[in-house]
Length: 138
Length: 493
Image (cartoon, rainbow over all chains, first blue to last red):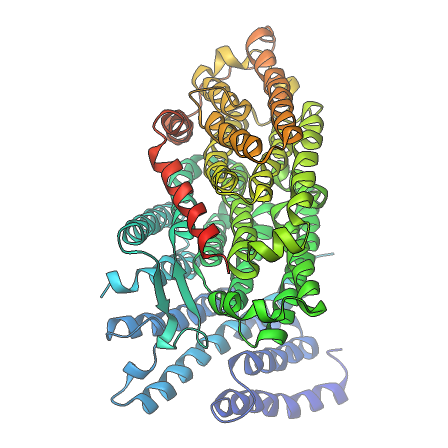
């Protein structure tokens, strides 16, 4: 597929918008349908498309297995740490109200960070699964 | 601050530790860290149970969202006891794991192994502590997915098919479970277990609730390897790495039995389950079939891990007998056996882990004269085996004693006969191993085999020792089991 000019040009055109749309779904999750899981999948899908068209090795240069493994772990840790911050600020686990000066801002901040954690982990997992299958020597 | 958040920390500590293991990536540090985490979950579980025993059930609202809407963690005597069982098994397994894992698992996968182990522990503790039916499903999936991974890490390539088989059966079970929960939600509009228990009586006569009950029973039955649904278990236990077999055999099916009890007694209630529906008779029949059938199959196994796996199916049958009696004595026996079997089977699988470590096989032909070459290891097998048979002064005797008492109380003489026959069958399959280990000559040409390392022997003897200790000093186990059984029978809606 690497020598097909139509595919290469179209992919180059599409991928930035796919990644941007992922970020839109991520941040719009506060107000409408969307959130970390969906955004992570879209982001992962954009980079998987890159890997399909330009080769897995090229994609791995940007997102090496080490980075992806760290991403998987860091996302979960971010989620869990936000929960612990609730405890540290005299709330229950995952209570966002206490994270900021007033509950509304606290809820905003909490859900933003938690969804960011979900986003990082889901995107990393999607790519890891793809690379694991694509990188298999037959 | 910490004390008030203990229910959340019980689950969160291993949950946070798992991704940290992935980041640390140093074999020895990861092991030490996991050990620390398992011990701290044990401390948390101990504190929780002592709080519950003095002040009554605890309720914890996650994120400060009040109970029927938000997710509630609820600790009473029953699940406090279960938390203690699961976390203490993990705390005893970890020292054992260090040596065993180095031989069973490729070096670069060891940190990931510990991460998966901690996730499995998170899932099991979460299932037990949560008071929300859907949250239970989420934790069920966390523990199941990580246990598929753990099983597939076995050295034998058949571990992969075993894990795949378990994946298929486990997913069907989880799907059935979530369908059941969905139907209950449809009829009641709530997922909180206590709230479900309060709202269900009004709609119990509907076909939807009946269908929900059927789906839940079969779904959980698959996870706990109830007799005709047990087909995934023998392969999974046989080919998994030794540590995984010990941990899963001692905890995973026990947790599923707990879910069974929780749904029958707290959510649906004794009158519906045992009087409107003939579930008691069904459980007694399946339990007896499991005890006799699986024990008979165990006699003909050549792989000792497989033999013990079939024996596990039989022992689950005993627990089902206890639940099926639907009396305080029966339920006490069931809960008591849940604990007793966890320590006996954990100990016995640890013995097999030691044998695997030294010989590289657990086939009965390879065990000729092993009793003389690994005296401490095989002595542990004999003591644990006596427990499985139910010889007095071991824990196995106590649970069978209470089971027989419960059966006599209800006049189920056939059940009494089945329990005694099951013990005889256990005697046969344990004796086969003992005979080979002690009364067959050591083969001349075999390489010299030594005793297992102390770091593996000591945890083995701790578990085997507790089977003797709690066989004599029964006030703690029977007292807690009895209190939990009374609590369930009284609170049943």
